[in-house]
Length: 130
Image (cartoon, rainbow, N blue to C red; front, side):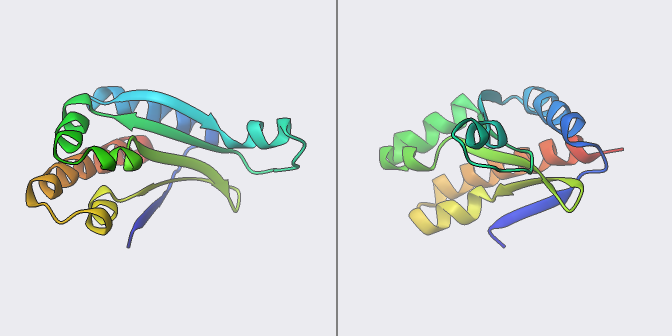
């Protein structure tokens, strides 16, 4: 499945904080956090659920992808979302391997995507650990 979703045992804010810590602990940088809830509400749209999208990047792996195909910059940086659904915090991502498979057939790039995905999986496991 292209989107991987994991329920968090923590509240929304704690889940966001734990994800931020896990990103750094796994050698990635947090480029930006989009607060979808706040942005939509500031534009006059009544959007109730909390939702933040974290843009994460490992510079070496990004450079390796871009050296092979600069047009793949459209798929970077990787994103991990934290949102409220049915009273629980959820953490989700689009699997880099699945996304890249839709855009390129290069085996070297597929290997980088596998490594990135493994790191993102680890970040999510650390985020939702009890």
